[in-house]
Image (cartoon, rainbow, N blue to C red; front, top):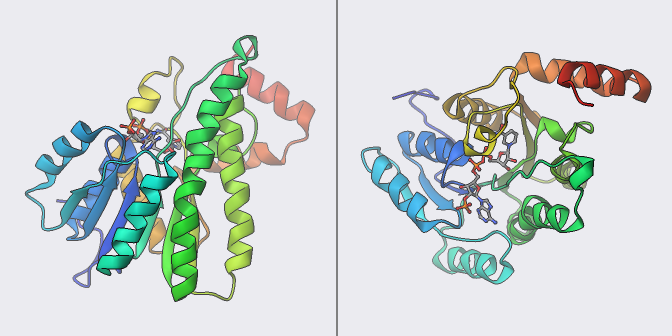
Amino acid sequence: MTKITNDQGLPWKRVWVTGAGRGIGAALTRLFCEEGLTVYASSRTQQDLDVLQQKLSQYPGTMIPVPLDICNKENINSLIESWKKENNFPELVILNAGTHDPFPAQEFSAERCEQLFDINLMGTIKCLEPVLKHYMAHNRGHIAVMASVAGYRGLPTAAAYGASKAALIHLCEALKLDLLGTDVKLQVINPGFVRTPLTDKNTFAMPDLMEPEDAAMAIIKGLLKDRFEIAFPARFVRILKLLRLLPYNCYFRLVRRITGAQ
Ligand SMILES: NC(=O)c1ccc[n+]([C@@H]2O[C@H](COP(=O)([O-])OP(=O)(O)OC[C@H]3O[C@@H](n4cnc5c(N)ncnc54)[C@H](OP(=O)(O)O)[C@@H]3O)[C@@H](O)[C@H]2O)c1
């Protein structure tokens, strides 16, 4: 068992993780259960949640499957209402659910963009609204939004994905400023490549690829700090942040050379 903290444990009792059925969300759920937390774990596929719950039954924490489509506002709101009524609102919410659908300009499609935006951006926003309202009303709570380093600048075949993640980064930056002076903590998570079913479909070499367990550990360590952005792995993030500073002509030339984009 990987121990994250000293004997004092983590500062939360209950956490809601969206996109917990597999990949990074499942790894986060596991680490939280190892640390004794109650995890409300959401995804659309009930079976993924059931399998994970079975696997995690040996740990001191409790995983509670909460099957949910983050695009369904009614379901989100009834979940939120049940927490309020039963007085067990999670102190930490990780809005991690998301998807990827890479396509080049030759296949550009408003429908595929809309599908990605509906989940990555609007789905996250639909979960964020009632959580933020509740936390602001009580002047406490901790929210982390999953974006990506792909939101820093345009990358080949990622027009829709990158735009959805850039929008989330921007949204969090603005909200962070609005929340200054309150005790509501908001962070944005920008991972590089993590080996999950989402990246398994990539056919190109993924630099500094991380395992989901390491990503989950980096996220939890970041949540314990006061920095707004949780970004990893460090070397890859540093390179992308330098690329962000380049003027367009240098940026396009360099990315073309690195990725072999035509
Ligand atoms: N893997 C990477 O390299 C990487 C890098 C940067 C950022 N990220 C971000 O990290 C997050 C997790 O990625 P991952 O790699 O772990 O992906 P993944 O393995 O595909 O897992 C995504 C999870 O989100 C759930 N999900 C998708 N759409 C949903 C919806 N509408 N409602 C509820 N749950 C939904 C999926 O379950 P169902 O399909 O059953 O709903 C699944 O449990 C995503 O936001 C992704 O963009 C990943």
